[in-house]
Structures are given as structure tokens and as C-alpha cells.
Image (cartoon, rainbow, N blue to C red; front, side, top):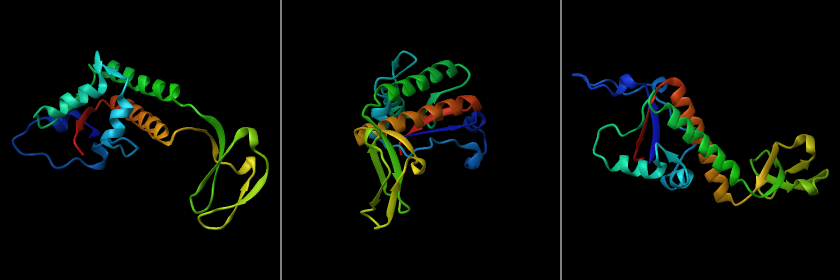
Length: 178
């Protein structure tokens, strides 16, 4: 399942079909989301008094041409509450030990618990280059948690940003099969 947003005029039926939306007329979430990831990300969140994922499934089963999830301005408060819920759920479930992260030139990531950080050089297992584990060269801090939970949290943040941007533009949010 996928989410997208477009200007409301794109959904008006006309005698002549409109050309496909341009990149400026189509908004997609920043992350690639699978159906399972969307299901997990929306778990525990509500939209207009029903579970958000149940609403998505109900809409997908309908046989409409455009499967509308939210329409501004009426759904603006509800969609913003959903975005806030997703951000809160991501924050609440972000467990794990705080780590400092470094990235090798080949893209390999190295995370060291903050309690153990000290200047050190290690060899990258993928490319063999030396990676300097100095605090000033780190790319930031993350919570070392279950990788699956990390992906769900990233999906929640991506959906939250997407919903906020769609409503800020005044665009209709659609849901459909990938």
C-alpha cells in the first residue's frame, strides 16, 4: 500500500482526462514503505475515531477510482493529530542504549555505546580502510535498538512528515496498492 497526495483539482472528473500529475503535483512519503511497515507504523494510531490502519484497509477494499484517506480542510485537525500520534509512538518506542555512530567511506556504519567512546582506530570489515573513532568525526548519536523497531520508527516519522506537508499544501491524501 502506498500513500500519495495531490492537489484537489486533480480528482475532478472532466470530459477529457487530465494528463498524469507532474512531479510538482504529486507528493510521496520520503521513505519507501512496504505494506507490512505501514501496518506496523499505523498500529496504535487513530484517525477520526477509528484505528488508522483499519481505515486504510477499508478504503483499499472500496472500488472507487480515487481512494481518498483525508481531504483538507475538514480532515486537517484529524490528520495533524495522527501525525502527532505517530511521532509520539516513535518516541515512546525508541528504546535501546545511546550510541555514537561513525560511517566508513564505503558506507559501513559503526556504533559504539556512548559509555565506551574513546579515540580509537579500527579496520572496516567490508573495505579494509581505517575508521577513526573520534568524537569529532562521528555522524551523530542513535539509540541501538531492534533493527525492526528502528524501521518502524523511521516509517512513523516519514508518514508524520508526509501528512503534515500534504495538509500544509491543502492537498488530498490518497491511499492505494503498490
